[in-house]
Image 1: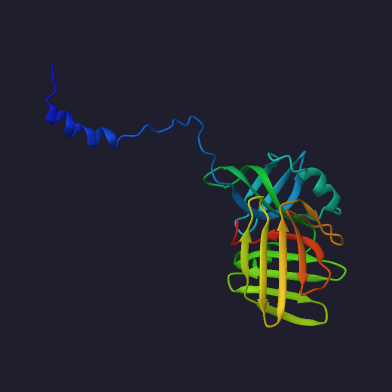
Image 2 (image 1 turned 120 degrees about the vertical axis):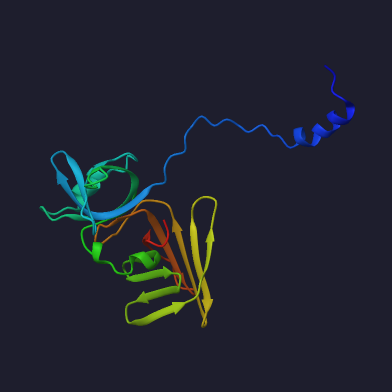
Amino acid sequence: MRIAPVLALGLLPLLGGCQWLPWNEEPRSPAPVRLQGELSRAGEMLMLLTCGQQHRLLLLDAGQLGLEEAAAQLQAGTTPLFADLGGQLDAAPQSGDGLYAVERLYRLQAEGPGCDDANFKRLIVHASGNEPGWSVRVSGGGMVLERPNTAPLALPYLEESLPDGRLSFSSEADGQRIELWLTPERCEDSMSGTVSHLQARLRVNREAPLSGCAALGGARN
């Protein structure tokens, strides 16, 4: 059977519009679920009692984060710790109880507001350090720097993300220059023992840089 030249030419645009798509046999991993709650021990495993909904989740250290060791160092007696975690959730639809495969440790702490932190959902990041003490809170409304014996300083900021995962928040306003650099490395507070997932470095004007720890807030996963 022969195809007429006119018909064959008419098929060219259709054939030209076809593309071979690569076959991907690996299914995409579901997005991590971020949860906060009280961390305690249930037999030989750690259990998370989630904030608000009060679901009971047994934890699997899927990311090999050393959760057992970190919890043992922080926990005093039977007082629960506050944990801010990310991972894959496998829970019963009705009760919400189940397993939680933890892939990221945002925060693990023995002191602080924990589930009662009213600012968590609005924060992009919170960084702090000691000796001398300092704190930087970044949200959609600006950057606020707090230091002892100094009034809180609220400024606009610019954010920069680098390919290696580092983040920078900087501001030049009202005669002040502030630079906050965050590196994705595990960090332990020198006084409280709180474990965070970011190392922080703060520089104010031409003063010597200050070191500390940081964690992403609820406005930035």
